[in-house]
Image (tube, rainbow, N blue to C red; front, side, top):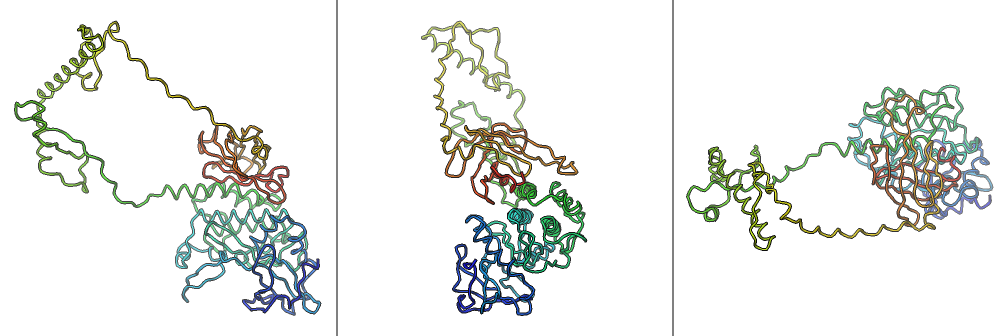
Length: 545
């Protein structure tokens, strides 16, 4: 534990950067950790120190140093301003050091006083779109769903290690929208670890759990996640009824929020359940955005066909064609069409005046030409010996128009030898069994699962959206089959082999990436461009299995 204590004079020259009701925050230039190169020091006010349980507070740096794996600790520091060392002065604890808030979680905010860089508190997003636009914030539905999904994943991670946030409010959550949605947690010293808090549990006005419920539990965190989801989607700082959700909210997400806010505490869908539902909501929002009509320049008109007018003299067809230039006639003449040259209009008028008799003569001429060509083929095939062409099936005008050749006597005509079929390439080799071995197991996620065998063949059993279902228990399931055909490092790729789901066709790409999350083996699973979620191996409790 001594390694987690720092003397105040070890922090370097303290530079005051902010203050609040609990104390003052300084830059601590001489302090670094394995997870952060820049730290700040929060010093509690003298009047507050007597109320703080510093033994409980010491459990927070101990979680990072003694309990979590390196990868888990790295993740925790990346999502939260987590207490990493306690600080003492003259032998008495005075506060703690924590990482500097990353630059990604600051935004330029436009107000009546001008544009300034401020901490990107989520409270700025709980407003009507017109207010967001006035403040210089662009937020799509997909962005809203992405932020909620990140918070749900972070809650699931914290809960799996005995941490509950408790006072979830839009002032204690920071957001980033680029390069992708992200949520950062602050005021972490007020959180509860394994049922113990360093500070008395309080709630932000307007963000209270239902009367009588215990504070800072998995259930209270889940309720406030649902409240935040409602207010973020509705653009409202104070909404409490699911009826205020926008009409275009996906049905499954609407049901999830409703169940969270109206069910008894122990029947609320836990944060693990939100990942799948929000993943589909993101997909729907992106599809609607892609399908929205786009303003684009008028398309280039298609090439105009060349039509030759009927010769007006008795000269040979060859001479007539050579002496008269081709005339172009556009396929469509709209208000934006390119003006035609006068000659084209004259030719078009002439074509409309062609008599039915001339059309019939032209058809007859085509029939004669076709017959001559057929006779020439027969003569050439029989070494110059003229053969009679059968007359039982005379050519019809329709034959000439469609280009069908007159039938030939099978006794005098032999079909040419068929061209050799192209060589069929040998099948591509499958993935190396040793590289595929880490993927070959059953992976669980919420109430879904992925099964992969040693050859790379597998199945994905998952919940399907159901607009008519009233609870998640009524949702139908699909089983999609796939084959992994390539492995590169921790990532295996392949294609869908059979699919009962019209959203995913046979041949769609699939991807599985190995990882380690919350102390267990995981894969991140995608179909096509859709991220389906995190799935766990031996211990599926983290993923809700």
